[in-house]
Image (cartoon, rainbow, N blue to C red; front, side, top):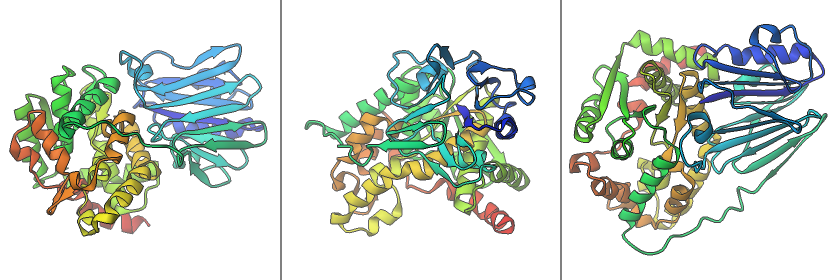
Amino acid sequence: MAILFLAGSERPEVLSRYANEVQRYAHKLPTVEIYLDGHPVSPGSFAESEGEVALVLLHSKGTGIVRSNKDGLHLELSMNELFEVPGNASPFYLRLKVGGDGNFMVNTDHVSSFPLSHAHGDVRAFASWDSLLRTVNGAAESLEPLSTVSCEQSSCASFNNFEGVVFSRRGEGDVAEVLSEMIYDAVKRSAPRRSLAVMSSGGVDSAILLKVSADLGLAPLAITVGLKGSNDFQAARYVATAVGADSVEVIMEKDDAVRSAKYVISSLSLKSAMDVSIATIFYSVAEVARSHNRRVLVAGQGADELFGGYHKYLRLNESEISDVLRSDALNLWRDAVRRDYAASAIGGCALLLPYLDRTLFHFAMNLPPHLKLSGGERKVILRRVAEKVGLPREVAERPKKAAQYSSRLEGVLKPIVHNIY
């Protein structure tokens, strides 16, 4: 995980004020790197220092990852860099360069898995999510996938080729076999050993990821969070036992859930009960993971959009399914990825979403509708994959229920959100 802030302004007090927004999370992410006009400064001296370009980065690697040379500062946020995953093959990244002249350049990956917001106002500013830029005079915009943004002293220009991406097709064969191999490869490319937690609801998406992680020798810890009475606990316990993975259950009291939700709301400025509920789950699981020395949180986000998991898809005509699912998958970066990344980060964890691995993402986009929805069944091919990787049939056939409902959190938190807004 990492929380990033980059800004340029001729008023030093502005930079200090924005940087303080990020440093409030330093107790969750112990490594703090601060550069002012290309030179490292300590957190204690930053407020009194003068300069025009500030880069602040919080993470948990323990050693610095910002590189400095004669051309300026260079930063790559990736699983390989943050957690030393071997092979340097993870498709998830955010690249940043700050030139010696104070100009910026930023590059995002195919799903903006390390989200970045950009504000136009009295400063040129970027941050990991919108609310970190709340003191900027101007609206914050999220950078689209596959974007390149260049900022000079007084303006920024962006280029994006996301809409022009052609999703490649794979050859014929046993689709479930090919897909299962892709999931193993996706986890292997980006997941570190013994630093892994899996957000487990007992559903097919997370069960596959838990089984694959265990098969790869990554020693995953399954974590389930919910209110008393949630059906997720029993289902997740069954999966962890079947897989042979260690597991933790956190049964939240109503007061605990409300307290966590208020912290999430104040940090991320979320306004819908659904967003607050989901973010509270990610934040709470990340907190538990961090307390068990797990810094990477694996989740099944994206599987519903790629494989037809939502009940609303059953109401579509067959001719509509591909276009609707494609649109939903291509727009994950706008809300879900940003929300869940930020909630995990303030809990102290990096978020890894293997179903959004580039190769897997492209393959799933091109699967025919009948492999996703058929005869009232959702995620058809993913349920076949579950059996292929060795999960019990009861797991493969478990009905889908949204996390905010199965955890019972949304019903408790909805009045809180309404009272605040």
